[in-house]
Image (cartoon, rainbow, N blue to C red; front, side):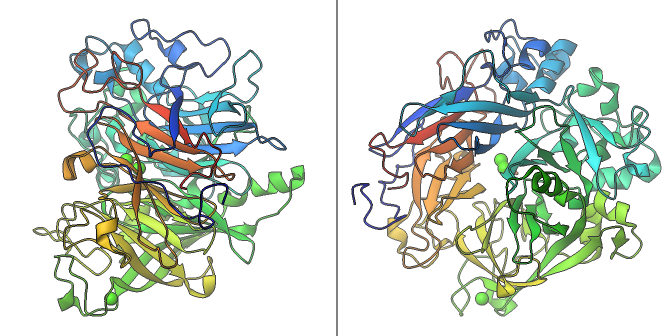
Length: 610
Ligand code: FEO
Ligand code: CA
Ligand code: CA
Ligand code: CA
């Protein structure tokens, strides 16, 4: 009771009202501050940030741009030190370079700045006193701090597709070593203390697909690699800095992106890996649970309209404990296993799913599903495709087995309390429109602007199993609208929410949801929300914070002690027509906008959410 909670884990905070402020807004009784922002030093000796003097060498030692995934891994035996691991998904050159006039006018040095601003950062952080606030550790002995970039970091390919024909290039004839990682969106922390990161919209970095060999073109097209070079949805012109981004000359280079990346933040000298056994698509992220059998299971989404949900089950079993032997073993778990894709059916008559969002007569959007095996080790289960084909062209494998086309599967997170799995379907304005796939019970709204949450309950609670039931606990939007649903909870008491993207759990089992898209669908800023998913409060969703103008909300990460909520504020000021010289946002420091990771806490020491 001294913490202010009436019940352990109860979300009693006062909801933040939707707004369009150029600020972070948090509930009464909370404080928030920037942990680290674009350009802040990461490696010892990094130069002070000067937006007019930026170079690739400087950026390679500084915090990158557009932070998305956030993980906080405590240093063993300490509650006042941790490693902050952050993805840098992409760059907004128009918001980074003063005098920007267009991508064609960028110098090669500026292109390399952008490449160095991609990737990941590992930053040692410390708790400020006994509060929930954290700040970077300063000094010369930053043993763990690391920058991983698209420019220069070497990655090792693992698994059955490593070394195969489609992954070989002139620079890497063995097909086992890739320079850089691209479009790292969401991710997850493994039970053995590594970080997984999803390579998502890698298509936008390549040119020349129309001049690639005939045989390579269908594979490039299926991954959305455009033959035209438009900005920003098309090419980023990186081929002017590194020829490998020209598919006319290096058609296989694109096949070396779109993987799940594993980084060991506790070993700064380790080579990060791309795991081919987990398939190749526009990976949003991956989150791992240990099944009762000891196998580890990763749930994953492919974020594009009408793409699929996947899961990976390891061949080997997890070894518990902190021994070096266990850790070495667990580091190999994602290198071999079985990859499945989801096929789902509804339990209501198709005629009752009319695209309006009206609930069917049985009172819920729900049904059954199966995990269809695509490949296990070196054995393919897809006719006409080898195991390497299935792993490298996983979308085509999903097509071949009739997987269910979903409304943009984003982050997928198992509940640590119940084992149920929660996937954000962010939106799909093409659903049921024209010749596109029609509505179905799992994607029930035509031209779905606001998205929904998809909840999976594995049969017998077995994460390695192949059958499950599912339902939609939340159908997003304005709660005043008839086509929204919040677990049956009184809709007058819930916050509007649109375009769910990243999902996370607190230790009490509340689901936290960050959004990307509310400015265009609800005309308010994006934000972070929390909602119970069990019991009488199921569906009682409330807005916890809002982010500044033009930003999407990422992370989130709630520390195990429930004293801190980390949130990534991605692309503040990303408004059509805005530039660093004519900014739409000046958060957080004034002048122009900087992406940053923030932490929010209760100065009275109470648990976050209360
Ligand atoms: Fe990078 Fe699917 O969001
Ligand atoms: Ca139903
Ligand atoms: Ca995302
Ligand atoms: Ca996003």
